Length: 524
Image 1: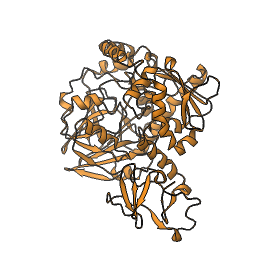
Image 2: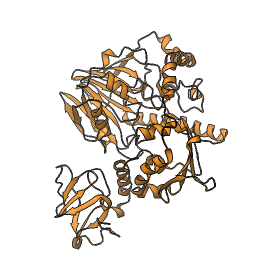
Image 3: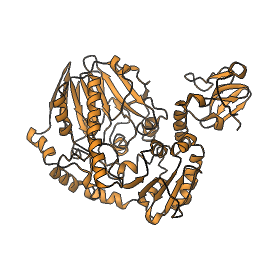
Image 4: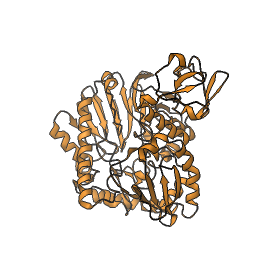
């Protein structure tokens, strides 16, 4: 097996059973904030755009480069789909012209023309943009695990697919915390130092668990070419910077001693044979190391090549084109109305200070959006340039984590600890997304899983995408219809009338005494 590293999490895998293109990333992401590091803008991509198979681990924009996928990659590639709840990868790719898909099942091996494939999918609201995944491949001679930035918690399937010869994994920061927070500098430095250490130690634990004799750090870090974000680059191995490069992590790997690490740059080729990996770089070793020892020089040259396009991008952001408050009221309030678990999990107010765009409160207690009175205290506060919010409104971006927050182009304050519900809410700005998140949270509380419906106790969440059937369920002639997506179930038997791979739990009330402490009607 031969793997050509394309930068960040991108790789082109050649096997005797076909080629696989994984997570290519060439264009800046998140409002021009993130660029691949080391630079890959001078690559000739022609050898890598006609793969037999395409794998995209999730829809974070540093893994789903829409421009590259639309303009460069052959639409005839067969897409290996992760088993994600909302099918976002497939939906986005269909819009770009892709039509050949292989739907995998989480943790199950699929064989495609002799190539064994297993995709381990993560489906919690906190995982990626409502889903992340890793790819295992077996060509009959060697096995690799491309974990990228997924964080698997169930290793049974991974162990069964192995043993692995090479493990690709994330080790560096891919987040806005704690840089954007208005903490005292000493506190921010302490938090950043801890973050830098814990993320690399976590990667080592994954490497030890997977047990491959060779590991290759990938999936980051990004670099920042905009003057406003230039300070986020780790130029001098700063212990308070959460974006260490691969050489820093490989020092830890060497000290750990249980596996061998390899440094790669864009166009490095890894030849993999059973138990062995040999890396060949596209330039002499001293030039490779200069990318890391003279990172400032590397990025200054990169910036000079990109600055005109970056400035044009920033100039294109809308400003003054949207009346923000009424737009957010019309958009967010219907989502808040059905966000029961999320609202309770936040149980406070968020102030969004948009400068001349106004000061807007998202009230998770009353589930309203309104102008701040300048007095009422709020637990959370974001300061965001109005142009970014206008962009999200005009483009109806349903995941602000995947646009605004990962851009690091905002500042945040909070009283108390991190609140996962808050950031998950901003991934779920549609009825479909918030219903999935709500269903996931409810499943963590079994006592709330059932409801009364027309003489039966049934599961409250639709087996399709977890819509709340107490809100979206309608019954006619013994058939329960989930109106959010139109799926139908026979109320007496639970048989799905829409698909043969789903079933509704249902039981006559007389047989279901004590199965639920409280009930609601589907007509409530």
